[in-house]
Image (cartoon, rainbow over all chains, first blue to last red; front, side, top):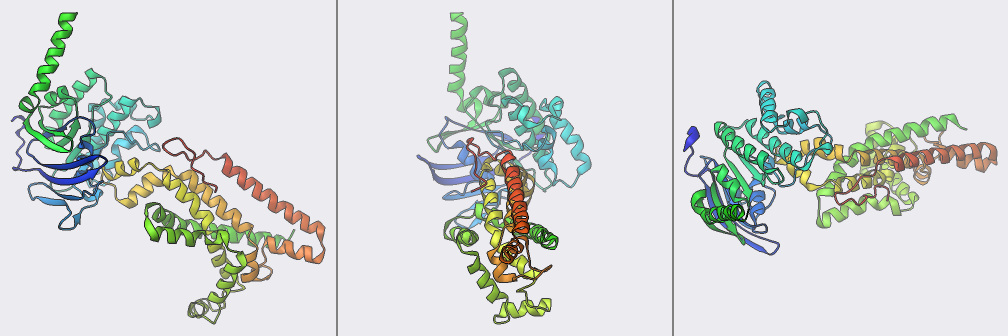
Length: 258
Length: 228
């Protein structure tokens, strides 16, 4: 594996049963790769799993633990439920909820406030803005942004908070469809940039996606979820081989038809 | 117009508003987050002054603050005088009487804040207190202003509680509404009409201010009624 990231056998272990809407979630998985994607159709329960890890959902029956010390975040049987803000986790939801009373820059800096190294923060903030192509928007008010710009601010905010995190262990970054709504060229650039950059920071990421091309670009481990169950997991080349074949076929078909 | 009564009324309303905001903010946030029987119980207790005759509230406060009850005796020992028929007593009565007018706009404002913003902040590591101060309160700032204006205005307009609790002591408990009552009793209709007109003008201006405020909108675009 490139990047020199050394990880213990299990970064995050999740065992969870939860009934939500019409879906009976029953999933069990462990993260061992720097970037893992929960892959599946909408309505399969991916977002609920992410929200349970973040601490926004109390599952009916679950054990969620994080880090080399196997720190328990949720254990319904043992009566443990760590509040969201105390978890070694930073997250960005699918819909960008930007704080309207703050500028783009203040939004991105929001989760850095509780870091104890304010001198490094400034630099990290500028770097995040630059890498997420937000430098020229830094002073703008959020209501003037386009959908794609809002999405980038939301992801940048979570990334900045993750990098500025103070704890002994690196926090887990949860991203729910972080690249949805971005135009394809910019999306591909950002995907590759984030993959490389977060590796150098040794930040593990769990994201949600239903875009196979994105998973390939991320070189991610893929956990495929369907109807609330984990149906397959492993390296992207194996788990999404069928999607890749269909993607290529579609492209060839397009070329032949053209 | 009785200028001493005007000054007293303004002092009472300002003090009441300050105390009310300090009490109403955490209370409204608790109601917003709460559920079940305890929430209904607290909401009912807060709304009680809306439906009770002010004299009932005044009567109970008179008893509670008097020398016949343990809390009353404690208050007398702490302040050195009975709270009934004093400015402090009036202040306690006003705070209770105007409580729903401060709490309800805040609850409506807090409820209109999309949970997604609260989760976004918590997902960035913000504690509940920080979330409240940096996200919820700025988003509900219109409700905060409404709450303050209503608390102030309602205190200026109270009569029954003041009469029961404070009586009619110039400079200590005689507010504008009591002064108006006195003027009518004396048959001084000229002065009475000036006082009444001042009260009407003040209330009207306050309400215009509230209705000119940008409305708090819920995430689905419906207007959250801050004035109920």
